Image 1 (cartoon, rainbow, N blue to C red):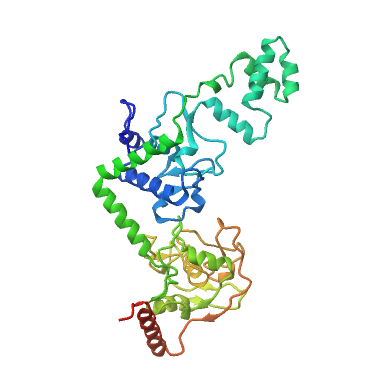
Image 2: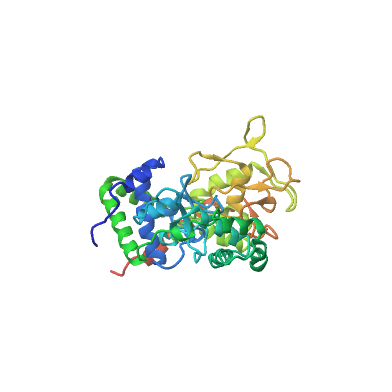
Length: 390
């Protein structure tokens, strides 16, 4: 790779500092771009909705119009990572062919003018306005045609046609600066990423350690000797294996579904729930706080700093699946602190079907010691099967 050439007055490090971001954030961006390039290639969109790798945890889709990183618009950072820096009056734009508002591919962004932003807004609103029509309106006016006739002919509002003819609107459309070919921009991007990871070697090592640790994390539904429910988490800390089983309608209150390490903890939780009929509210009888306005259930989570959660959240985790930081809500007509899995939902996941029934309710083992011996024997058997023959 060739040497990176950047404008002398601009520093990639200064761009991050001006946005109150740290060298750790630079390292994250460098690794994320290299990982996205490896996963999706140069041409495709890198939609954040599909990027479930732990490395992308700092990015958010909370803003419907653009990708956000640590509360900052990520588009300008992506452009800077490919050696493209803004000049006065320029704004970050997504190219028209990009399919996702939360795309992470740096080549799907460019610096443009505010006139282009307004024109893109007109397109989203499905107004009949384009660069071609704007140029035709201007040419028609130069030929002496009436603004009213031009507005009627090209089906644009009269006030818009008048501003176009007067040079008050869209006058900057032809002022966008030329851009290097994507191949050269990718070379610059890879060089910048390497420069950052080499410069911040300690932060790079820590990033790798954190990433490796996250890949070893387990959700409560993981069993020793299996590969599922381990290191496969989404941006909200949800177990993606659990999410698939939730989509398939899993709904069970059964301690035997969990590894023996979780038995007493899972059983203790359900013992504090007043389990009634399948369609009745199951009221939490355990600890509460703030004058009985919040429930408290002990249940450590790899994606939460505290060791306690709301009872409804734990009830959802232990009956349907581990959903990480997603908030759990009961129905409006439910009694306070309802823990009936059929009454619990995640509002952000409207496409998830509600369970038709609770398939099983079992909060104890018939013979806990026999089960423990059997589970241990199965784990040993699975381990021996994985070892190479002597």
